[in-house]
Image (cartoon, rainbow, N blue to C red; front, side, top):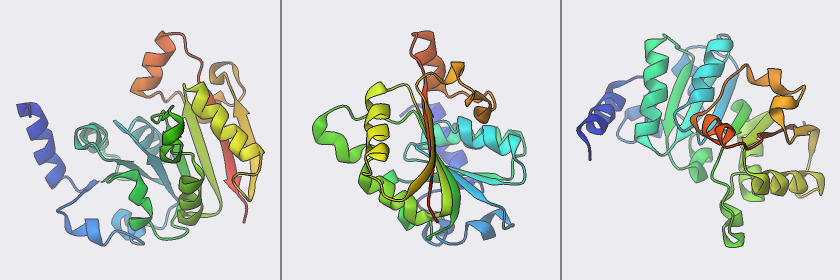
Length: 221
């Protein structure tokens, strides 16, 4: 392991905006995120946040809301944590965990919104259940989101996008409403919803000529 990465891991251990194994809050944060932020403001989760571009980007745009980026990679979380710390974004935090265990860290109805940004599309048929928009994940999101909670998906992968869209339109995910989508975000009226925020992967894919897909919906009350 490189020296710089070790330094990043040590910084994660002392930063208050990082919740990870070994910290006291890690085992008690479920249902207590409002206490962590010190307010009752709505909470948005970026699942598979990578470097946390959306977590810190949205936190800067919406200071009256709280934002959490979740990822298993400590080196990625460090980047978002460092930006939030440098810019004084007290409404941004990071959780280090595998995404299959999100309901171990969020109580039912604790979140108001969820973003999934450029996840691994898991293209093999045998990996369908590992896709972050598969029915098993959707059931988990429904549990931790408040009634009428919103879910956003942003991806370059046509395979993942079409899989998710078909799932939603065919009734594979029950009780949804306000579904909107575009297969070309940068030529869509939905673009302003993103406030110019781009992830590292998004910039890379756009340079290669990929179009960006986006959809959102709400779970019914």
